[in-house]
Length: 282
Ligand code: AMP
Ligand code: FE
Ligand code: FE
Ligand code: ZN
Image (cartoon, rainbow, N blue to C red; front, side, top):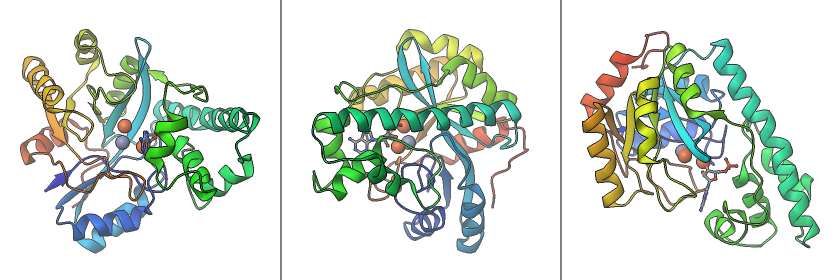
């Protein structure tokens, strides 16, 4: 069983990379991809744990990108973590995320929420590299505003909320080119998830393919049957790899490890497309 999209506490997951790998092995996965948002900070810890637990590890990340006015998450696998331009892009996103969270906190505090920047900073400790809205959600949970991130998001942190503040991110076409230049494999994450803020426009796909897109995530909790079928149809039309995954965030989301999986042939193609600088660890 292969799960190609998960998050650790280096971004907005709740488990350390080590605990994530241990849970993946216990769940019966044979291959796990670690895809923290905009960072490779969890790679070495996950690699050590994967060896210990006898599970294969695909090192990756989920890049924040935008295209045609929409926010698009791009999974990137097996790229060179020292590629100067790609790491500079990830650093830029990570650094812009911090003042953006501060602005959200300011707006909420002005509206009377019992929330300070120190409350959010407390959530950012312990090696978390990528600041994001879930850190504000967790600070609000600590203050008793709700029990789960989902409720906080539905009430105050969703994309249409008055508290929403955007942050810098690279255009998806440029990101795809950059991942390929770094020897990696770009795959669109949950592209047609209508229950998220905005899905990828079908019309955008040809230019993404032209830029070097390799795959598309079809089996994902946030995509209904119709959206999954659309992803599979477009994959056939453009000869793209189809993946499935959990998008596990530990206790931060209801998603469970291995709830959706990827076929071995799909992983083979991803591996064959990568330059080999960052191999699948077995
Ligand atoms: P940001 O990157 O700061 O825009 O925050 C987006 C992150 O929030 C995503 O990576 C999701 O993991 C998380 N998220 C979005 N909606 C929800 C939700 N309803 N419940 C829990 N986490 C969510
Ligand atoms: Fe996330
Ligand atoms: Fe995502
Ligand atoms: Zn994700």
